[in-house]
Image (cartoon, rainbow, N blue to C red; front, side, top):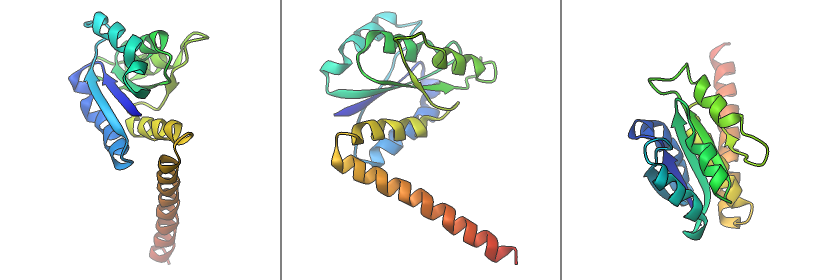
Length: 163
């Protein structure tokens, strides 16, 4: 199984790279593409309607501005979609992207992460896969344990440096 990572334009790539890197660190295969909801609607329809036939299990869709990509994909695909609102140059501080992805109608859910939160989208996609794949689940557990270890070490450093 693999995770598809799609974005509305090439300018979203620096943000979406964080999801790609995270998934690669867990040895999860990815398929990456640029699909514009507004400029390539035929490509969007073909991708969304057929992704589940191509060994894709989860779709991460990043978009800025009006950010229709995640919702349109979710409306056409039976797969879980994780939306990444991207603060683009034509964005209203990212709020247009956040609300476009977050405020989906009943029956068309999009799991939405924070503005520019592609790394969390990658983690969530890995957790979805890990629910039925023990080797991925073990990697998630190690990742979470490492987060805990870093916080404990930072707290100890803080105490040692403020005495």
